[in-house]
Length: 313
Ligand code: NDP
Image (cartoon, rainbow, N blue to C red; front, side, top):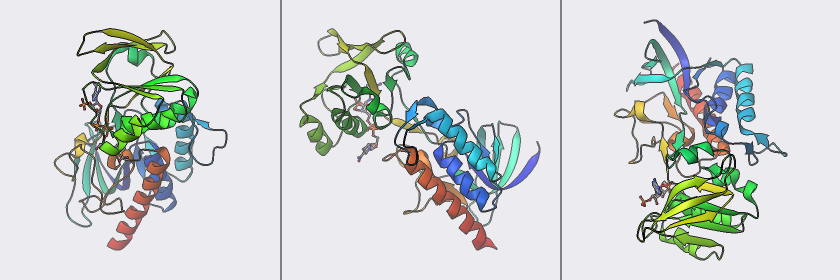
């Protein structure tokens, strides 16, 4: 196996990774960025991005990611397609971290910026898969606006589902919230907010059996697990809000993480519990999860890496 030495290795190619790359390359850290399996990250699965500052007419998600990549490359970031498959982090200040890419390439990195993101969980139905981008979305804040004045449904009973149902109720005519148990897991305050909206109808004991429609969503077939009754509900938008999974598998046993597997960073910095290893974006943030907040923490990670390296000199 060949061994390469890198000053700053960035893992992940969403808004956090590319923003870290822009800042790191401008600071002459000569970053190498590995894209992972989904170059561009979660934004490549969305259509229009209307809430990123600086785009008054909105921008296509995949296009925005290509432009972020080009911006990072303009300052010298080397973007490589590849998957980091193993890491051996070093606890010593100034120590190098060993990284394996695609199971066959070894890298020694002085600093690592982890921006591997999180993956939205889906129900796993083939009919749901078919209509992703055709009415099925995992982000109400990103896509809710497209369903202005229409009837939509949301699945889940956690804080995300409750928050997104409330958000959607401001935009859409009617929101049907499908909760599989007899109660929500969301905090009492969030539940109260949901229940105070006239246009949110919460259906308990309700599971989606089938997502209806050929190329665009037409409705959902809902199974009541208490009565065994099946009901078709007409909706043009379906939001899946059943949680996210942070992409942190390869760091388990080394980096400090919370119960859900999100990387823990120190205070308001991007420092992890290993010197020279920083985390930015959704991999360390389960609360905000926006492109702009991910980009913000990507910038912070690059600045933290730069300061860390300067401190070693
Ligand atoms: P959670 O894991 O808390 O909730 C997931 C919800 O989805 C649960 O109601 C669960 O049901 C349901 N669910 C899971 N799988 C399925 C399935 N296959 N079919 C139907 N329903 C399913 O995830 P969240 O994203 O809501 O929250 C993650 C974390 O982020 C939490 O700690 C939350 O508190 C936090 N958060 C905080 C916010 C805030 O403070 N403003 C906003 C958003 C999130 P069941 O209960 O039956 O398991």
